[in-house]
View 1 (cartoon, one colour):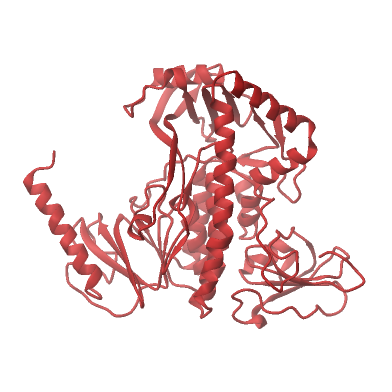
View 2: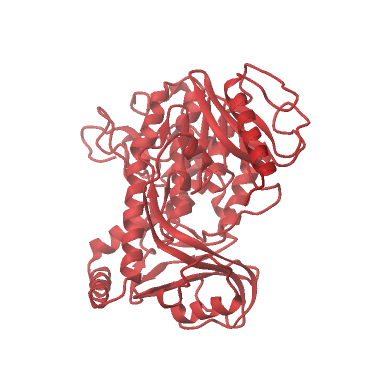
Length: 526
């Protein structure tokens, strides 16, 4: 129980935070003041979503400050191991995919219900597989890119509140480093509140998001499994497959390699669920592995172990004024399918070009399109992963019959297999076409071959400039295409020529989706 001194200290801290939020510029224990933002965008959270967003914004010329509560050099807890095809395409459009491929193993099918495979080797594009690699490898590359582009990182900053007004947003953080590095070189004591000011704040701070709470957004949903076991282990008998997934009525198990002789195990068995969040030891990890995978693979050493809840939740909208949410701060779902990190990366890719345009002067109504496009995708991911988890783990004959029926559909019905692969890979995501645009607007544009030039020989290479790309025919001039959404200056487009023999002119958004097209009357399709 907190002592009276503890309570008094907390109350004093809250009073100080409230004064900072409303004072119009108090920055540290020195009471420095300013009326100017220290950044165009403050990103709260340095996981994969926040890192991709910060890198894109900084590369576009925006001033970006990233606040992260972890000390510098402390790796994030890796839960994600699957990088799906659309995420690899997004990384390819940032020049990072090939380097990431070297860190992991490629899996070309995912087994579900113990008897049916979701085939990925027929997916279109360069990446007909899921890459099994730890989340920290993704973060390493995205962090490097963001730093090279000029994003500023402030570690040891535990965000406590966010406020906004007509002129911008304020973020309060407790400076756990005690070096006052949060703003203007102040010498704040450890834990002292520091205020950051910017026109825009994006919360990528995870399932327990402080930004979400401060914005007043509810997080409705439910806990599906209360205490899944998560452990890092060494194995005496490693499995041959890069990704081991097993499920049956009342259990679910997952095993994947870090690549350094350690493995991540995630599992739950209803019969072994202790019903509490107490410590996890090696004996329990072995027991859950045997119950879920049929073998503990000689688990002999435990580096880290904990429990976590599998939740399904989503905010009703991703924007509240000058505050936006992305990744797990906006939606969280079960680990089934490995869709969490990938969905967050796509959130960031959709938001970054819009926010960069607004920083440059575009109407901020452009940001409403982010929530309009990504909220339905988040809801679809919740439905897909939730259905998969419930079918995989629910006990009883009815659930067993449903699993058998699902396996039969996947095995025999090609359209069902294609749809499942499109959902898992996110290659099947399509956004609504804006009024007046070509009917194909909102679709993913494949990595078209281009006539080799300064912007490369593939569309992904042209997208690395972070701008709209005008793809014209190999011969002649491209057709005139009106400005895309939020396009500040059409003269800044990257102009390339397609080398696939088609003559439609395409305007491709910076996130790789079609903004508009002009197709000659004698042809059809884009």
